[in-house]
Image (cartoon, rainbow, N blue to C red; front, top):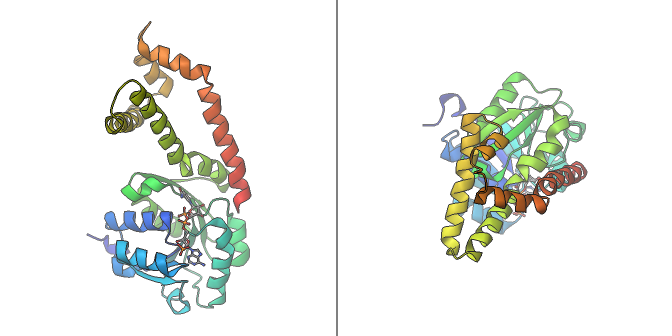
Length: 275
Ligand SMILES: NC(=O)c1ccc[n+]([C@@H]2O[C@H](COP(=O)([O-])OP(=O)(O)OC[C@H]3O[C@@H](n4cnc5c(N)ncnc54)[C@H](OP(=O)(O)O)[C@@H]3O)[C@@H](O)[C@H]2O)c1
């Protein structure tokens, strides 16, 4: 059942690519919105046809000016270098309502950049991640100067429908981009590496992927459910003279901790230059 208070909400998803589609898919799977009230836009006809075929939502190339006035909330999901042009187009339509929140998920695009173009709009900067597609995402949202609690509550509803949603000051958004925004890719690389090890010691590739992915899922859930520090959970499964400590020391020899931590530092630096 679509939530009663969201039933009539009209949402515009500008840039229905990987993330835009993940969010539409997640919101539909959570039954948050009425499919007929979603309007998506893309750049090319090929993408337009793909969005219509896969998600069944009204989709156009570019966002039609006559749709702007009736849209209650915008989700800007284009690449960062396209955001300014998209916001300029919304402004140029002359139909953007001052009460319609404009939420951007673009890495590195600041609230100040958005407010320079749309000085009267309630803007929100958000950083979701791709597991939003299956309802297991995590998103951080930060308000702009005209953003009221009800706008943040709306953003909370949208992103909570596809996972966990936290609110943080914008100063942390580049770090969030580097940790959870880009994070699924790091985990995929780790899964692939552990599976390579499994194949090296004789396990079939598909079994290796199943074992490793389920282990990652289980370990993450154990940590979240118990609230324990990961080092404590690690120590609990590290038998003296056992194979786990042998493997962990091999990873430490390869500087796994500082490699992962420095990777986040590097990604944060890059995120700050994207906008
Ligand atoms: N991918 C991630 O893991 C991730 C995580 C968090 C946040 N983000 C942020 O999400 C944003 C989108 O990333 P993505 O990976 O989803 O990119 P993407 O797959 O390339 O999607 C971008 C979409 O924007 C469309 N587009 C381009 N110009 C447009 C315009 N003027 N009007 C309407 N649509 C337009 C493109 O249309 P065509 O397909 O027709 O070219 C494409 O569908 C980025 O800003 C990124 O920083 C990404």
